[in-house]
Length: 418
Image (cartoon, rainbow, N blue to C red; front, side, top):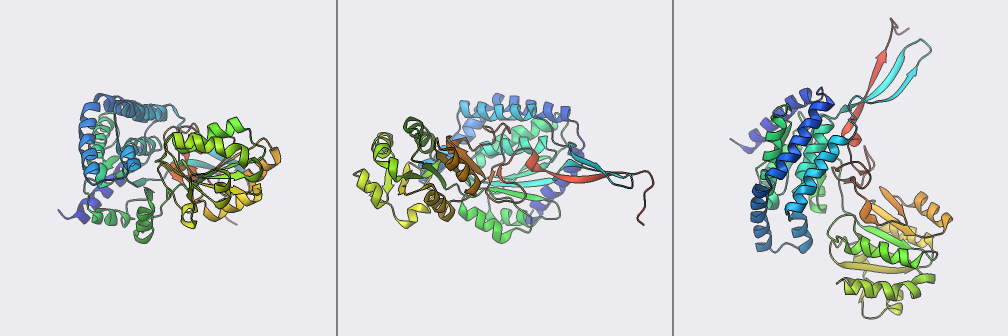
């Protein structure tokens, strides 16, 4: 059977399943999620064996360390993935929630309620955990999902998706509600992106090349999870101890993810006191520092930062550092180079904090906290579909509500248009 026909069949099955899934009770969906979580933990050995093959292939192809870290699974990570499904089960069901109600002069009552989007296609790279997160969030929000992971994680994704699909259908979820595309050919993605008869939304998670490919080929609306070029600005009124703790965490805790800091901005009045200690701490952790000329005047033995560095999402232990004259210059730098993901200011100055919150254009803006906290789970949303860096129809970590649309409901007692 040709790839086009195989993809089309998945779309038809998902569309059919979505109609039934949209009407299922919260109890049925939650029971399915808990069964899926249990089966994942029971199937850990099978998943790890599949993941081992993916890791071996990735190492042979000499993928970067950050890439391999995103691909890597162990028992603890599988337990965390299963816990994410359990957390989703605990969350309020958004489907059917009334968001507004008002009455017109003619007595007609008009309301809005949340409804599933329908069928969602999720295209992602390297992270096998996304397979479970996406399946769980889509199921709870009443959407069918077609998953298409990268070829580098195909074995892991097959194992996880197979377990999830079987657990879901055995719990009363319609067949086809959770599907994975096992074809690794790029043609399969192209066909998926043109399946607007059946698919209502595409959610891509990956690098710039993937986002560009989807933008150029999709006939379906999409919400992009773009790169994370995140900044932290240490203001002159920052608490030094707090700044060191936050800045270290933002870069070092897990450098290969999108909410890790890539550029550190430091106010000139605090640079002499803050940077020598901070840079030493970074170097002890294996971080390569690339600084502007003013930074090099404060700390020695660091590389020159180029124009390209300010635009680079490293996803590894490399950090660009720039000294600025003011909060206004920090905001201007972020406006010029930021990706709209997550930005932070460290300060005890209320007015500078409020100015930063008001003027920085990003999906998450932090005061005195690490950008690593930009995450659906950390925000209390359960797992997330990704972090939207665009503004329509959602922005920031995508939780259950972001996987719903709304419809008007109207109560009348005989009203007609005059």
